[in-house]
Every structure is written in C-alpha cells, then in structure tokens.
Length: 198
Image 1 (spheres, helix red, strand yellow):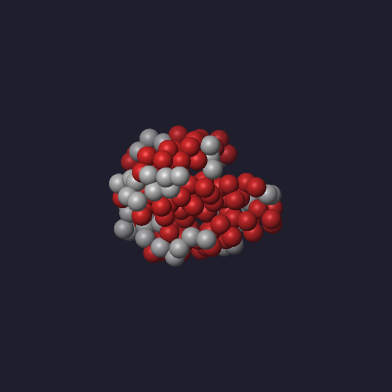
Image 2 (cartoon, rainbow, N blue to C red):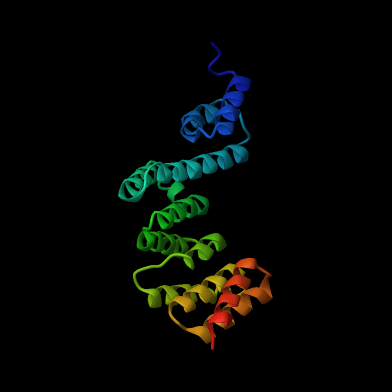
C-alpha cells in the first residue's frame, strides 16, 4: 500500500537483513537508493555487505563444481566497479579457496592487488596455493618495497617462503611481522616452523 514510504522500506531492509535474506536486500537496494532511505555512506556499506554475503551463500548452496558455478554466477552479477572493491574481491577469493579453486583464487587476488594494494587481500594471498609457488613468492616480494611495514604482507611472505621450503627466510619474515604487530597467526606459523626445524 505504501511502496515508497521511507519507514516501510527501512523496516523491510532490516527484516531481510536479520533473516539473512541477502538476495532480497539486494533487490531492495535500488528503492533504498532512489527514495534516499539511508545516508549514502551507510547505503554503500550495506551494498558491499549484501553482495559479499550473497557470494558466501552462493558458494555454500552446493559443494564442488556446482558450488563453484553458483559462486561464479553470483560474481558475474556484480558490476565491474563492484568486482574491484577489495571487500568483495576478498569474499569471492575466500569462497574460491574454500571450494578448492586455489589457482583461480590466487589469480583473482594477484590481479586485484596489482590494481590496488589492500592489506586484507595480501593476507589471503599467503593462504592460497597458486600453480607456481616460486612465482607467487616473487610477486608478493615485489609489493614489499611499497609496503615494508605491513604485518599482513610480512606474514604472507613468511607463509609463501614455507611453501617454497625457504626456512631461514620464512623465519625472518615471520619475526619481522611480529615486530611490527603481535598477531596470533604469525605466532602460530613461527611456532610451527621452529618445531619443524632440527
């Protein structure tokens, strides 16, 4: 009865959000924007969150190849601008990784990081296994000159050195990461490395 009432739209958006109905939130976004229901910054954050959750749900609906196809369909629904948003690239790459599409996840992250460096993407880059671990390490090391004090990048470099069996270099990177910022992940990686060393 009142399709453009700001209060009704706001309540509907909250209800869909609480129920985890992210595809419904996405369908509602154009109306929320047109009727100026939310401030633009809040609307942009809601949009990123809704699309990110939609990617996660698409991947979780099915396992294996079917889940991967569902995830890729959800990714293709995004605009090209959205596909460059670090938060959405992170959600997509993480889902690829969980579905076992490690090589694709590495390619997506490498491309995104080449375009625009983001610490969260750099952290995930160390968790994926690309087709060529040595090249993956070289790529990550090329980011180091512009971001020498990024603890996430140093952690990633430590992990990539471990993949490449470069124990001493891995130790140096992990210790450097911990000097910049105390991080449980870096502590765990360093502990595993030290326990494995003779």
